[in-house]
Length: 492
Length: 148
Image (cartoon, rainbow over all chains, first blue to last red):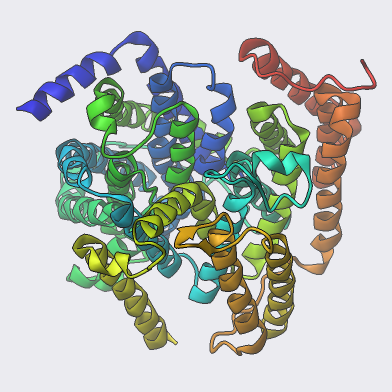
């Protein structure tokens, strides 16, 4: 009953005109970002931070959350219509969605994708609503030892899942931790790793790194000329699925929702992972697996539900534990901190209007995305064909504005450029960038928890193994590493 | 890929050595209390280990690197240089002028459009961004020392 009361309060807050406007803005931006190559939700959220710095936190974060789940809707449009996934989480949708387009069934594919996304997105927000208070209560008993173990688990899972080489994932993570250490020591206030440079005393701004790492390589790779789509000229008839389409898609949507929600709860679980797992599951469960890859509607419904179910679930560790599950959530965490909010077990208790207003806005935002993405699908499809020679310079100018606007510092712009160049080579060398970004954002909290824990134990690392909850979490972390290594050995 | 891994490993080792040198006076643990150097030293040690492993360990997997095709390499390298030049020119010419020039040149170079189209695009992009961010959203943008 308390949850219902809180949600009602959240709805009254979310329904205020300003918050509704920003939810709509976020849904539009997210759909646009999902459709356009070269600009993903992570870089977009990072770029929005300086433009919203002077605003009330709630509408700003509502808008950024809208960009996050809106991009999941938008990414599927290009996957289905032009076989070019707008987002990594929409790769599996392209396998069967584009085939359906070639068969003249683009409308059904788009319709089931949008409706399945709405069902899953709404269900995952319900899960967020029910689980967030429970997790918050449990996490209130966590101290620095448990918090360190949780963040360590997050790192190990991200390293296990991001990229083909765990060694390179560890390297990426250690680079991020090193970058996070640059600046002033948080305890003693002494300069650290600045090499006598005054500009580095304020540390490396994570927005500059995130924008550079996620936008510049995309633009450079687009110039290489790899992904060019052709809009199949087809009438978008029948955006509402037929009864048979519903029969075929209903169970995949349900399964995708549940699987996506579970994956989203795990630190490191992303929409991409959820869609791969769901597609694989649907193919295994189907009495006709040979239809997959040739226009099976289950191959669209399941993955699309999964990637949207992840969005609500992944907000749970972010809001209640302060642990982001991926790059987008890391950017959201940064946004929350810059707006003076501290995600963690106390957020729901000390800022109930903010927390429940945000949760309630996600219900509304999902509905807005459904309304935006069905009737306007033709417009989104045409926008996705904007040539890169026009889109690229605009994206880079946006990157400049988003980075410079944080501290009015050209140093940050140079950091962005260097980070973008490094990220381009990292992609070529198959070194994942997500662990680096995560470590950069979470690094200060990780260090604080580590130092407090070691201070409590007078320098003995055994404290992490003598606390039962910490020990259990570290065993999970070890388990994820072993499982990942065994999977890789089996696949090799 | 192994050759690339060796180069990468060497670069990482140099980076680790640099960070280790920068952390030399920070301390690690003093009377059981963590010093500012705790996390940097742990990260450096991890980086060094990764660098050595990358340089010496022939990984069982050898994925090919998708370097750009030869005809695109000049464009990629030139574009990278253009991005750096953009960052260098903004403080001098200001955001609006630099963005207009940058957008014009890149759209002409990447897309082969006529100068009229490229200039129209460049000017439109710069002006619309100036209006949106500087005037409407009040995000201050550099005006340039040349104009000041």
